[in-house]
Image 1 (cartoon, rainbow, N blue to C red):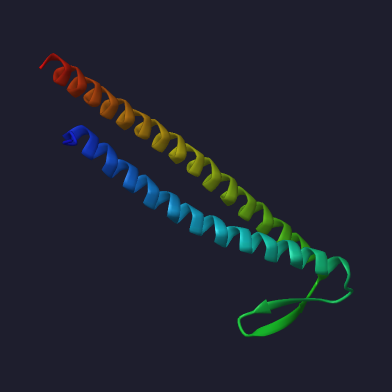
Image 2: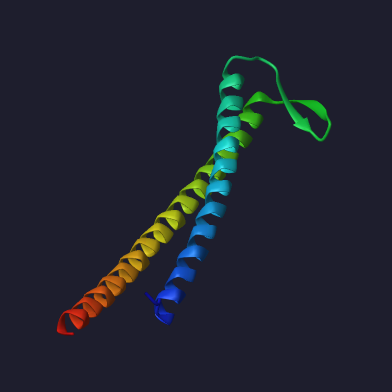
Length: 121
């Protein structure tokens, strides 16, 4: 069975979407690791009197409340980025699903057409 030019184009779109989804997955994993790191740091701050921040290759004493505020800001940013990636990922998945359905309909129509043609002969 020959694949139409239109279906070839849709298959290429699906491949591109798959690559984008893989990139989103990698970004999402990195952000989730950052999220866990920030949450862990915030939890550790609750149990300590003295706070330190790593700057380059050294640890610097820092005001606990100021460090906590920095971590909360970083958490908000990471959460926002994660949310954005999840929305984009969902949108791409919907687009891929629609394209797959279009391809399947086209293939099924072609099969039906060929079968009817064979029955007439």
